[in-house]
Amino acid sequence: MPTASDTLWDLAIAEVKKRENPDNDDDVKPGEVWEKSILFMGHKNGGKTTIILRCLEREESPKPTLALEYTFGRRARRHNTPKDVAHFWELGGGTSLVELIRIPITSHNIRSFAVVLVLDLSKPHELWTTMESLLQVTRNHVNKILTKLEKANPEVAAEIKQRMWNDLQRDHPDYALVDPFPIPLVIIGSKYDIFHEFDSEMRKIISKTLRFVSHYYGASLVFNSKSEALLLKARALINHLAFGYDKSKSVSVDPSKPLFIPAGLDSMSQIGPPPASDSDLGKMHATTPLELWKKVFEKTFPPKSFCDLQDTKDPAQDIQYTEYEVDVMRAQKNQELEQYKRNASKSWKEMDFDSDS
Image 1: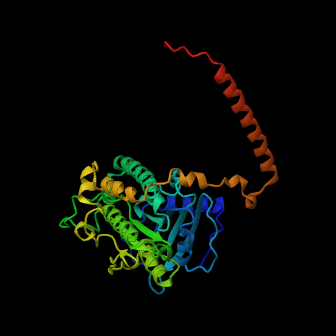
Image 2 (image 1 turned 30 degrees about the horizontal axis):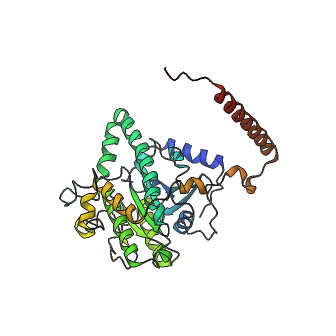
């Protein structure tokens, strides 16, 4: 199995290859190479790197992800056939570096792109904020690409929009109630071993909420931990996206056990209403089902403000990236910035504002 050195040259080479082969499609003919891309994002220290390493069958110790990292894997679908390629991108920093998603997701690879969102089940107070921030920015970016594609290549844009509904047939009772994510999405609830120790009512609220969100977005949902059995289930969903392996049809919706629900195999009737009393629901004002579930969830688990930003370490201060010349220049620029702030603050205070204007 090849490994990637994660240098800028590796990223550049991979990007050139993708731009040279923009029209990878699901309908790969015999002898052709299947080429897919997956972006992993989610909570800091949520287990994204571990999941990627297991999917690629690499016996390596996971290291903290800095900003955006890249690796790849190759698999042959059958004996004596070319190996398919899967590009794995990992966004570090939780929600603080979400704008970097523009690098891996482009108009050239949008047809073969998927997203894996890893949510730390042991941090319910950060769960909705992390999920909402990452999915909103990703969805907005993908929609901008699709808008441009509608003008440049309307057939491709129409094909991508049609795929959004592949897992939910028109006769599905929830067809008019959901809003599928524009590209394939898998939601992984990590650290199930810690989550399993929570109060049963807390587990029920989190499980029902994630079931609803996944179904609403047309996503697959799986709970994961260091358990080999659970890792294999998560790996099965990812291998389906990356290498076209058969999609699992098994389902586990018991809230006392790890959830495993492939896209399109859940329903609003099975999930049930938001976990709140009728009187509380009547007092909540929401314009969409998603907004209603958010209010119910955050009543039990109030979000932590700026939790990601406060915890984000400055990579420039990390000793493993020490470079003497760069650090000296950085220190000089920091001094200049502080001097500018002092001068700006002083001049600002001395300015005469006309209150009548």
